[in-house]
Amino acid sequence: MPEPTREELHQSIEALKSYRNRLRKEITTISQKLHMPQKKIDSTLSNHAELKELDNTLQSLINQMDGSK
Image 1 (spheres, one colour):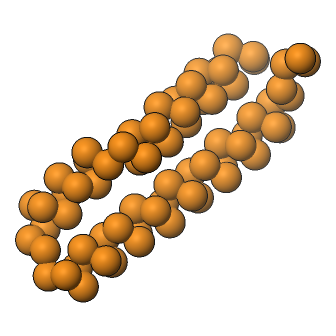
Image 2 (cartoon, rainbow, N blue to C red; image 1 turned 30 degrees about the vertical axis):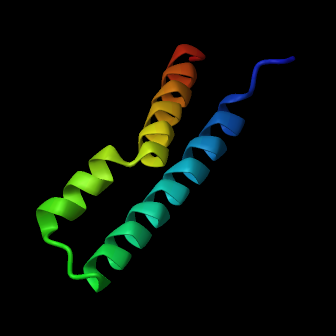
């Protein structure tokens, strides 16, 4: 399988960042509608499995892009 180009990496990073931001906003909005305390919302965001996975994947792609210079 060929190595992705810098442009492909950049597009993937931007798409994942956009998805991560939408997911964070959705979680926050729902939590606020449930009148959850801000500390609980912050805890939920920092411990959310999918958000953690997105952050790890993003970091991996960023490292890969930095290594392809």
